[in-house]
Image (cartoon, rainbow, N blue to C red; front, top):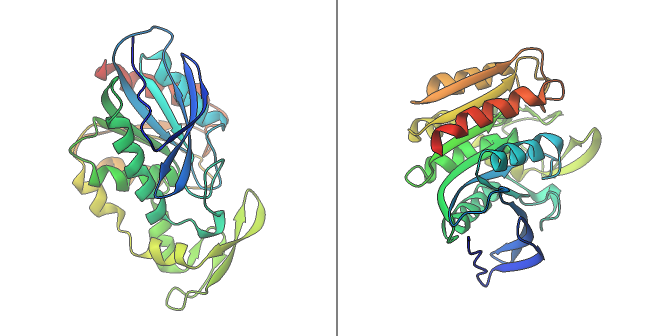
Length: 270
């Protein structure tokens, strides 16, 4: 049976055999995490890390669906909430892609150090999809595969143009604070979010990762134009693209098609 080691930077909230909830503490900041195991008990499992999107959290239907798809495929599933989101530390206003990538790197390192983990696959939705693309470029030698779902690769481009997250601004004179939309309501965002996004070039990160990639995108995505998913798939060295006709950013109409695509992709790694 697997052994779940508890290093000093773990604060356990719930510990039963199949479902564990804890904080991973990185540089004094808590990253809220949940680890789920397959029904079939074994000594070793491959593991899928799953990251939500902008304003999201680990209990959204499309995130929990990916976790179930992983465990039903014989993988452990590690869901995490990054800086300023869900139950993790940090203010939403102050989050940036750099902070998310730094925490994603820490989560990958944590996962690789677990005694029962054989391989690590990185999955993220929307801004989480962009985050895993950037993270995979840096961890290209240790990640088995990559699953960006509806990846928000337009964020850096839009930030350089002066129109992102429903905020318009002068890209050469970024204000200290912007008003953005957070789940449909106005919210404050530090201007550093834009400054960081402007410095990122997604195409460079894509070129760095040569392993297997699955991109799933609804072709009526209202938040991230489907062309960004199509272009990313063309740019990767080894990518499969699954387009879901008529579906939305969070797969609200055909969630089963997204999870089936994930299961089919994961099957090659068992």
